[in-house]
Image (tube, rainbow, N blue to C red; front, side):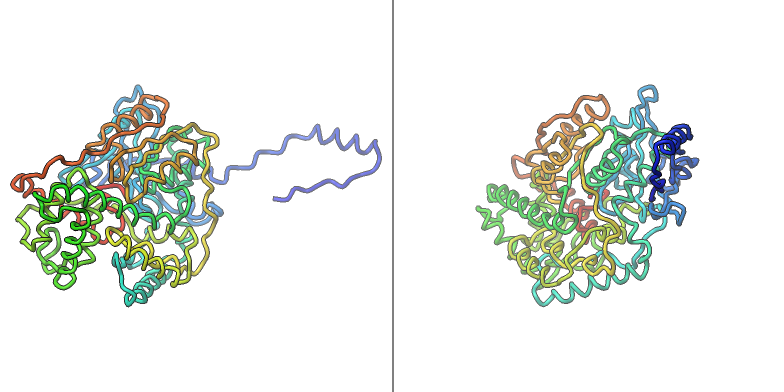
Amino acid sequence: MRRAHAPIIAGALVSALTLSLAAAAPAAAEPADPLSAFHGQEVAWAPCEERLLEGLECAWIEVPLDYGDPGGERASVAISRHTATDPGRRRGILLTNPGGPGGAGRYMAIEPRPDLGIDYGLGAQRVAEVYDVIGMDPRGGGASTPYLDCGTDLPLPPPRPDDGEFSAVTRTAIAAQRSCERAHGDLIPYMTTANTARDMDVVRAALGEERISYYGASYGTYLGAVYGSLFPERLDRSVLDSAVLPEGMWRDLFRTQKEGYTANVDRYTEWVAERHGSYGFGSTPQEVLATVEETRARLEEEPRYDVPGLPEGTPFTADDFDMYVGMMSRNQGIWDLVSLELGYFVDGRPFPGFEAPGFPDPEVELSNDSLLMAVLCEAEWPSRPSEYYADMREAREHHPYGVGAFWDSPQPCAFASRAPAEPLVELERDGYGPGLVIAAEYDANTVYEGGPLMAERLDNPLLTITDEGGHGFYGFPGHDCATAAVDAYLVDGAAPGDTTCAGIPRPRDAAPSAQARSAVGEAVAGFVDGLGDPLPPVGARIG
């Protein structure tokens, strides 16, 4: 807004009179809060209706669709609440995010529900004693509105596509982006990390809180850093678990995943080679990889149709096997079971019978591909297919397992019809206290380098999980050290500091097949449930 300036009038008398009148005039009124209607809204809590959210309260918070035009169209953000179990020690709300982008967050506040396939929830952790734990479905996904549905899933190029597949991969990405823009071209510009952070602050104000504390995992670490950069005076304690690289959004960040998967395959092949007598895959890592490649070649010629967890008649292909090898090699705590499982592929034996595990309640959406694709368009992507093709060739040659060339392939946002609506937020910590950053040495989703760089960018202490390929650690079984460090900070108020925790131990010996037989089918089925997802399933590991 331009300020009107009085004309300069010659003459000391007139100048003096003007100054005296100005001094006597009442001070200009403070500009009205353009978000006051949102900040002061009444929140109507009610018992959540979905089975997965039983025992929690749910509500919807109205927010502007476009924060540049708060008087315009509105959106609603769905939230859940697990109230503090020790009200006398309550210290506010803990807002949470599970990752993604596109991960729904209301389930974060639950207590574990093994009957529904959910073994995680902050409602069972010590933070639930002193905080109202708030889960939030970000705009565009879950129970929030408007809901994005592009009519197509995120395209899934094979981990090692040959040159003849490049054009088809590109056409599929173009078709996905066009489908999204036809369905939601008017909404996509507003589905950004910055707007989700702004929604969080409206939630804070609507709940009558001066400040929030925050726990976010994976993509949620970026969201938390953005919130602190935009609203530093509103952020109290914060934990960024499995931190992303603080720059390179989004393509450069995602392209690091393939190297993380390769590092885990290298760790696993070394371990299993030392146990050649038990598994017979080879006595050196090179021999083990040769066995893996021979198995893949057979699957390329003749896919398996008996893999647990797949619907009858669904093939398990060589591409599936590439992803399987990368994903399963991360879990060093069950490398013995992974090796027994791998043996069924290597030897061509039929899988043992098993009872399929229960997977997350389908009534609750845990992730939304359409929202993922929209959020990724908040950043610029290269538009020349040739740039992607060169990277795909390098990835398939040197990093074929896990995601392989997936993130090196052309993505839908490369063909967006409009530029991002606003620049990405510059991450900084200026105005709130140091939080805690967590990173695992062999995390493939968010590679370890992201932890030290995020900690340096925000001048935060770093908790390193050594010899660990997992992803998301607070409250997860086997990570008591990390959980205790987070509790000491968030609950007890101890100042966070640089420290290390050991990852889940590697098995010392080969597991007897009788002991492992029942676990094999469940482990394969758990993997198959996440097939086609570039990140591990949200219900099993935060993405």
